Image (cartoon, rainbow, N blue to C red; front, side):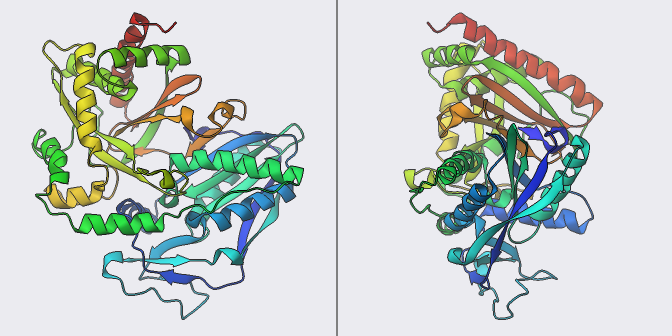
Length: 475
């Protein structure tokens, strides 16, 4: 995970791939998911306030040699036709962009569940892609500034809310694609890495690509809304949320060190990158966790909790954690934002030890994971006195990326997930396990207090994990 501000691709010839169509878009009546709605409303509010913002995520990786433009054009035409996320979208019902302006008959249907967002789709067979040569860049700084501006601009439009391109060089070429976060997540980007390369190599060889039609995210959205509207404040699915909030007097947890921020105001953010464990150390840590009743994620949460206790004396650990909602095999290949945030709560044993905390963390995570189908925003509407939230509160995420298709090629292809400049009201963390290592990406408010205190806390977390990994090395 790299901020766009820190990404400096080598200069070269830039070519973009522009989707076009010969049909008017048509409305659909599937409401946006709760996460999509909150994301789109927050992005619109920031634009209205004149704030530059980057509500997208991106993927960049290298191909050998000077990329074949005809092959990449075929790649993107196949992608935008196959995946619903690239030919459906949402936009506001009112205001200057209340619907596609190309067809006065294309009015959104009256759907009270959709609230202020209308959905549209483009017939997939009407879509074609053409390469657009931007020009040659000789300055890395100029190239970076151009890509940042273009990504911000293109992902903010209703459709296509993505920018795909390539930086061509004789020795290697860098493919990049940025997508409004409304329509993608980390799992989707991993699928794109594999599918782009599969399609490209087939196109270069003149071979057919036999890919089954991929399920879309709209049916997932419909089912989420139907389930969520049936919930009441006393529903069993909300018990974990009620317990989580009650344990903190009705609020969200504070970070164990002073951040120099009030926890509510969104401030410019800073990104910290931590190498946590090597591949061998990660395997040893997981073995240690298994001996004590949990998995790798439970061990990481237990280490965070133990460090919290050492810093504050608080033996109750509360954190929001991201979980995938791809609960069924047919959802594994969907391009979309199929993620939720759930409340994790557990108490350290007396006396507090990592070995004793792992089982408690595992049980707490299993309780939280049982409510993965209850969207964060809907849960807070029902049980939180503060009402809905427009942005995701600070959280901790764990992702085992080793099982993703072609993950063994990430390092050789210099695969990178890119994000926009950070903004933060608290501390969010992403533990990512790759084939060769475990990394930790951290977003913090850009304050002197956070710059001093957060690294001290995370250094202790890493020390706890390394000590455990050394206790039970793998053969």
